[in-house]
Image (tube, helix red, strand yellow):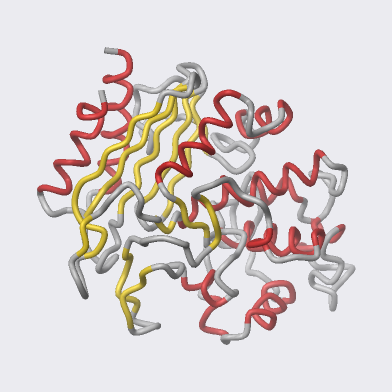
Amino acid sequence: MIDQAFAPAAAAVADGHIPGATLGIVAADGRRWATTAGMAALVPEPEPLTEEHWFDLASVSKVIATTMMILRLAEEGRIDLDGPLTDAIPDLRQYDIAGAAERRLTFRDCLTHRTFLPAVEPIYTYGDDPARLRAFVLQREWKRGPPVYSDINYILLGIAIERITGAPLSDWPLGPGLRFGPPPGPAVATEHCQWRGRVLKGEVHDENAFALGGAAGHAGLFGTVAGVLEFAHGLLDGSGASAATLEAIRTRANGDRTAGWERRFPGWSGGDACSDATIGHTGFTGTGLWVDFERGLAWTLLTNRVHPTRHRDSGIFTLRPATGDAVIAAWDG
């Protein structure tokens, strides 16, 4: 099964579109499959990819870490999802308490990306002190626009978690094979960062997450294929999430978005063969996780498509759905 499912990724590696790829599949009954091909690094030194390598999960951090943290805090009664962010961050836009639209944003607004905040902002260009940059995020008057998928939403959620718990995100307990960086084992190389002047390996690729100290609400999580599969299995069999959390991440709340995740729609990253009860999320570095609750099946495609540069056509936007369709074909066949 795994060879058939991995065929699109194996071809992408063989054709030189991406340096390396790992595919992992897990069933609700606990059966697991994983395979890998290609290189963890091409430069400065070649390094073959193994299943033990840690990937920079990029925006998959949003669903494995931040979304789960926020929903847990809500279950514990420490936040109201429909309450304003100011319940946790009272100093948000504190110089315009009466008029700032940011002060009316709720936790659920940010979870489901239904805010007016921009998709991204080069926060790292405003300084190199994490505390000062958090203050910048909180006091900035953000330009208003239509709702979009936004890193800023999750940076705010990450700050809220830190305020509520009194600890950095990296202190939150995660399962084996998952942690905010640096990882404890061999790491997959990402980009030669022009800003940092080096090939990134074992440090977060996202510039804003790096500038914010390495762990932020939108990025910073590293994981092995086994770690990602263990998390996915916890969703499939209910051992890793409560009924309320599962309902929140599976229920559409803003178009095709749930709390944190996307739910299947035509032409999405998970392919067209999966059931309507499938959720998924991708990461800029070339990662992704999809969970088909109807089939009791989840898969993760982990690549280093930005190595050694993001400024090339890796074909990742066609590889992801092709892989999803191949996984379902292998499973159903």
